[in-house]
Image (cartoon, rainbow over all chains, first blue to last red; front, side, top):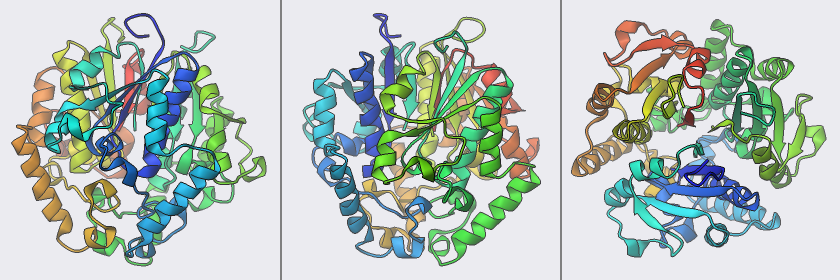
Amino acid sequence: MSENGERTLAIICSKGTLDMAYPGLVLANAARMMGMEAKLFFTFWGMDIINKHKQPHLKFTPIGNPSTGMPNFVAGLPGVTDMATKMMHKQLEELDMPPVGEFLEMVHDAGAEIYACRMSVDMFKLTEEDFVDEVDGIIGAMEFLEMTEGAEVIFI
Amino acid sequence: MSENGERTLAIICSKGTLDMAYPGLVLANAARMMGMEAKLFFTFWGMDIINKHKQPHLKFTPIGNPSTGMPNFVAGLPGVTDMATKMMHKQLEELDMPPVGEFLEMVHDAGAEIYACRMSVDMFKLTEEDFVDEVDGIIGAMEFLEMTEGAEVIFI
Amino acid sequence: MSENGERTLAIICSKGTLDMAYPGLVLANAARMMGMEAKLFFTFWGMDIINKHKQPHLKFTPIGNPSTGMPNFVAGLPGVTDMATKMMHKQLEELDMPPVGEFLEMVHDAGAEIYACRMSVDMFKLTEEDFVDEVDGIIGAMEFLEMTEGAEVIFI
């Protein structure tokens, strides 16, 4: 429950890979479609998802991910990450999943709130100019905890 | 709390490695032993844990994991993932931890509910035939959120 | 809410990298500063964060992390993890973030409770001697669930 008594999903997004950008967006979207509040807090590597320079170039790398079936000594070769990223884009397109930027906009238009972590902003020496328009503010961890009292919180 | 007033642990499993298969199973098992409800939602790479063709071959790779003490340039060599996987199986056996398939069955027999994510099913072009018997259904993120109102939710 | 009616943040720390050590500490610190209870449960690779021999040597590896902008075939070269770790230490210092050991002590002094996972203790053949002083006890998953009823739980 949030302050106003609505069931709330709070999502902390700490990863900047293409594959790990989607779970937060899918869950925020599902939450909004059900009338739940959704609040996303982007931190650490997850900052790339709201960084307008980096968001269009999120990558998926099969290294260290045995689910892909690709051995690490192949996954580590030059060009493999780009190829795997292209393939994942194609798979997502076939599922009618919007690209990350469009999905973030959609989720924001649907009422999800989007925040950047102040500490990560400082760490990566970013400014408000670096973010996509959907970012509702730069806040600290305490502020995020304050606005998510009673929420179901997940960390991605 | 779930709809019927029981304390509920909801676990979203998104990783398909041997080491990251265990935390969800251990927590679901602990929850059931305490009389809590446990609901597991397998998505993205976590699909491998309920995919009957892939479940017996989950791997542990030390690459990108400095806790193992193995440098990446060694961890990336052919055969190292298989060797590390064998060692982890041995460690788990010494702890009397059941293999993943058996553990999933045990947890399901104890009353944990097991769901596959519809989007991931489509993404990996799977059908019901590909899953182990313990899967109780293929559902969307919205349905999972619906059945976990008031739960403590974790994302692995 | 905990047993005594306080809002509680429960954090399961399963990763042993330098970058993934911070989110749990930052959140526990923020929680305590707000008067929330904070309970940390270290498990699997996260054990390194409370292992006194390993804690001072946590590493950050850019392999498999495209957010760093470093291709995997470079990230996997000998020495790159050490260099990236040094750079991250410098970045954290510039932010006035304390080193992990000091931060853990600070958070503990502020009232956060710190537990080691019994199964992981057995798996890595550790004893109480191996832990930093801040560890309040070695407990099982069930005990952790018992003491976090009603908490907001996150898994890192």
